[in-house]
Amino acid sequence: MVRARDKSPEAFGWTRVELKPNPKAVLYPLSWGILPIVFAFIMMVTKTGEEWIAWAGGIGIILFLVGGVSAVGPRQGAFNSIRIASGFFFCILALFSWVLVATNNLLEVYAILSSILALIMIYRSLDFIFKDIGLIYQIEWSAKWPLPTGSMVDWDIRSTRFSQNTMALKRFDGDRFAQIYGSRTTEGLVLRLDIFGIHEGNRFDYRTLGIDLQDFLTEDE
Image (cartoon, rainbow, N blue to C red; front, side, top):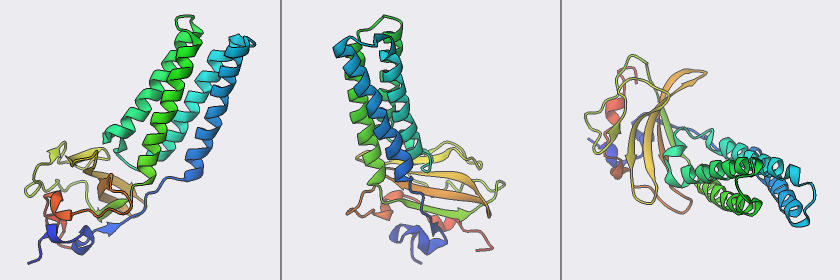
């Protein structure tokens, strides 16, 4: 018998799916978000329109967040990645700094610096997402079926019942992880295996999953 660890999930009834973010929906808000930050810097230096500095900076950061959300939207549980979560964290921190500027509790220069840092970090997050080769597999499932955890070695089991949140998670080195979660499609319920953080030019060793994918096959399959 061929073990699941020796082949990709496609050899065991799973179907590979494409869940790539739309580059335009990501890059447009991000690029437009830079302009308000630049305007805020110009207003700070020239001492003109100072009452609009906080508004400009805040709008810029919100656009950064819109671009980031558009990128992570197709990838369920992407915030399990430390690099991605850190990008959003610094954006929230920058947004909070502009709130402090608006209430005269922080100098504009510190908000500008926090915005630049937020841009760098969210760019690193988006770069990490777009370089991912998208090892996402799914198999037909039922809400009545429990997650077969018997062969899942070193997995963080969060729920054995069908859920559209992360049901099980396994971390590897280099901010890479595999997760299992449920999803609703036009054809019915599916269970998805998402291996995140594998970039172009790299190969994933399916033996490291520590799981027998045959346990997920139903009698109909």
